[in-house]
Image 1 (cartoon, rainbow, N blue to C red):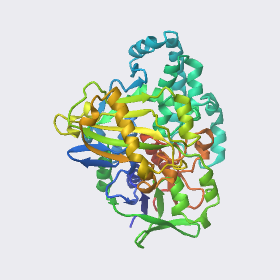
Image 2 (image 1 turned 120 degrees about the vertical axis):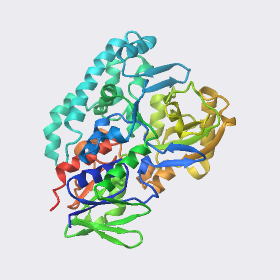
Image 3 (image 1 turned 90 degrees about the horizontal axis):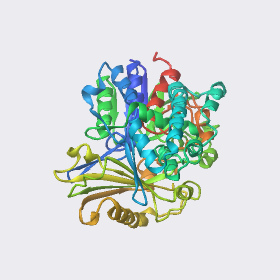
Image 4 (image 1 turned 135 degrees about the horizontal axis):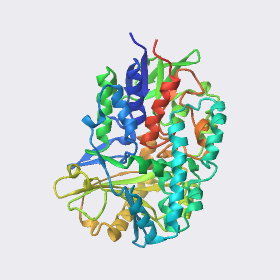
Length: 491
């Protein structure tokens, strides 16, 4: 019988790892504690509406295409990706907006509406972003940082990316207008980072979007999840839902299987955790096996913000609202300080508004719209009781939307549900309720993140947002590609 790999968690990282291991000859079992696969990419269906719980943006289709190719299939025969233009509409508190796209001429015109002098600076920023992409994504994203020597080896390349700067600091070297600085620096928030502290390596996102576009998965992001499950099952692998792992078992210094919450033990030649990396070490791997990721180090690490997400459907349509809208508060720096540093929940917010029915009416009943809106909020170091605060906070968000882009919203909501930091902690088992795991700051990047090949025990591997290279669909799928380098071939 072929070597057995157990994968804990069925987020994009876990599913991609299962496909890659299956293609190499491993017999794969994926264990998921929820009642359906996806992790943060879970799908909610209610009252005729379909809501993607988390990821909504596909930016690098080739990382997905590779997985289908490993199974002798073509992604586009099974999943339809639709390019979006503009990528986002960035709306400011005074009602002005910026349409963000890949069209060079359109972008120059948008920039000139705010600051003609910044058009040239934007062109220079794009060149920096392209260079950073070639170094950071093409060169390093699928490389294992399991040794400090690897970090030293690539240090000259990292210096060329100005990695010691923050994304906002880098943008500010080339862009002078305050609103445009916000437009070109908000991207780290999509992967759990503060633009004022996230390493400038993440400036590569601008080139990445420009080169590959921003795409929507017809039928919702959950279609990608179900497609990956089909690939795994087609390889002979299996997925078990409603199956919670309680402990990673270790024998002679190597992971040898898992123990389930109900007491069942499953033997394995290797174990791959797609669970939150901090939770993997703090709760699944007993403390006696941990030398680096001790409880103290885990508690002292810096975590991403959490999210408040309101999913809602309306009995009317709002055709003037685009697929993706970023609604930025005029308190940019100070609001982010409240969220990331002071852990204070305030009554004002920046919002990401997602209207997938702008591109795919099938996600809502005829004549209706499906939405989700999320607000970055502090993780659970903040003294906030979300059991009592969630509904008042939702009403604040609803009022803001009704007063700006969704008139009379209160009269048209026909279905509703919320996700709070408590859900990230209790449902998704994320330490401190952090939505993206560890923050992508300089000292938590590359070798400094939890390694894809565990530093603690042999035969244990990590994928997902909390390990290298980081959060976002391209990041977590690339973390699975790193396994090709560090996991031995099955014996």
